[in-house]
Each structure stands twice: as C-alpha cells, then as structure tokens.
Image 1 (spheres, rainbow, N blue to C red):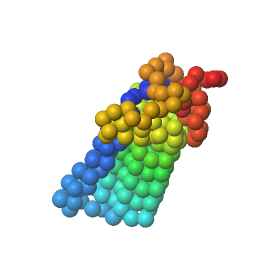
Image 2: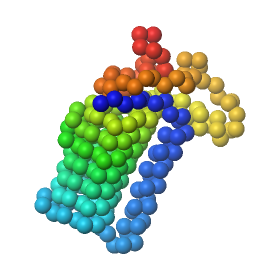
Image 3: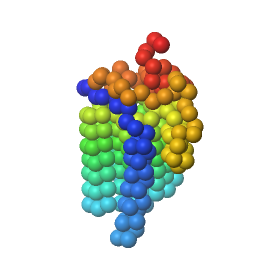
Image 4: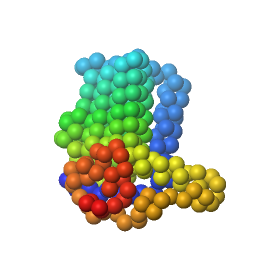
Length: 225
C-alpha cells in the first residue's frame, strides 16, 4: 500500500493534538452526565451496547463495546472490538483488536499489533508510535511524537512532527507566533522546507522516522547528504 508523508504546517498538527484532548474531555463529561462508568475491563464474550469509561491501573478490553470508549490507566489493552472511537491517556496504549472509529491517544507509547484494524484515523501525542506489519489504519495519522516505527498499512496521509528537532522547530514557531514577530531565527539547516516527497510505501519512510536524533530526514535534507 502507498501513502504520502506530508510536511504539514506545525500549527495544523498541534491543533489536531488539541482536538484529541478536547474530544477526550467532551466524551468524559458526556459519559459522566449519563452515568456511564464500567470499571476497568470488558471480559471476553461481554457485549456493552453503550459508550463507556474504563479506568484503573490496567484497563483491558477483551469483549465488545458498541460505542465510544474513554480509557484512562497506566496500561490500556484493546484485544476485542470497539465499534466507535477510542480516547485514551496513560503510559502504554496497545491495540491488538478492532476500533471502528478513530484513536485519540496521549501516552508514552501507542502500539498497534499485527492484527489491529482502525476504521478511521489515529491522533497521537506522546513518546513512541509503533504500528506492526499487518496492522491497518484506513485514514490518516496525525502525530506529535519523539519517535516512530511504522510497518503497518496506512490508507491515506501521515501528518506528523517526529523527533526532537521537529519539536524544537514547533516550539520556536509557537514563541514567534506569540511575540508576533520572527524574533527567534532558526539556523539555515533547520528551516522548514515546502517540498513534499512523492508517494512512497510506508516501509520506505520507516528508517527516517526511527532516528531519535537530528538525522537527515529530521533536518529536511535528502538521503546521503
């Protein structure tokens, strides 16, 4: 499968991250208003026909939730099926099952297993984003992360800020935006580029995303520079 690794303006991706956090707060408030709280797990064979909130040290979904899920825990595991969206915050979020909607996650790790299937997009703010070979995301990835390893299939585009250098550029642009001037100048090698690479398999961009340091890809330079 082919996809495009687009250099989306930093502001757009930052807004996507804020959207993910807003969605989690909205779902949390709505669920509490309706009294929808379901403990810390959905066992195998259990079908919950409603939106739910799951929280605790470890949250495990082995059954089926016919609705949206808000999961807050140190570790979140989805081995079953969620027909709606998954909104999650924690140290580790791992999906090995099916999510019919989008994933909105803020965590140190978001991992998609080889059988994971995401019906819409993935919005991630955190440390590491891993998608195993065999996993499927039908739409886009929007992410702000320190690192990524992408071996799965992506239906459309990846819009991301990956690595410390890109995060530094985001911070500089944000400060200049608040000051209303380009008071802080980026070094020439760190200046953003407007050129977007041609479509390439996800596997072809993985080596460029795995580096945690200022690699050629992170600096916007062609390979071998």
